[in-house]
Every structure is written in structure tokens, then in C-alpha cells.
Image 1 (cartoon, rainbow, N blue to C red):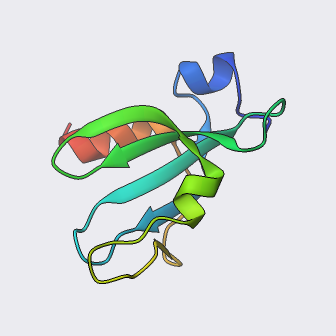
Image 2 (cartoon, rainbow, N blue to C red):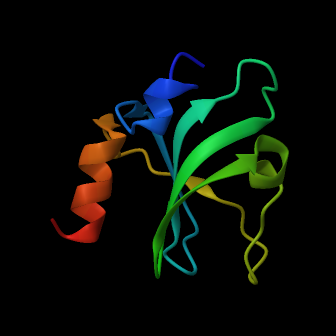
Amino acid sequence: MANWGELAESMEAFVEVSLIDELSGWRIYLIALNPDDQDTLLTLVSGDIEVMQTYSLYSLLNAFNSDGEGLTVDTEFRRVKACVLYKKLKGY
């Protein structure tokens, strides 16, 4: 929650969690949780493109790929600033 607001919008927030769709390879990095609506998450999505967007926590918990598998938490992911992660994903 502390990441919400100006900190997240400047990408100076820390990414704490990475979720993976094992089938497609898409990743969703959780940046911030809205303190006023804890169902709203700010995320960085990485796959064919990298894009920042909000997601519903409920929709992420109930997302399934074509094999019926849910998202998996990347247990090897380590905390990193969003701006550093974005640059790494873009190949900078």
C-alpha cells in the first residue's frame, strides 16, 4: 500500500511479487495496492509488450490459462525498483 500514488507513478516503487502464466510465459509484477480499494493493484505486465496497468486482485486470483492453470508465484523473484525492472525488460 505504501507504494500507491506518486511513488508508483514515478516507478520508484519496489516490485515485491512476480506472477507467471506458465503456459504463455507472461508475467505480472505487482507494484502497488490501492489503500482505498484493496481490490485494485498497479502492475507491470510483461509478455509480447511491457505495459503498466491496473488489475483487480479478484480477477488475478481467478485467472486461468487455456490449460485451466492459475497464475504461479515466482519464488525466485527478488525485490527490485520498478524503473530498474522496466529497463531490464526493455533491454536497456
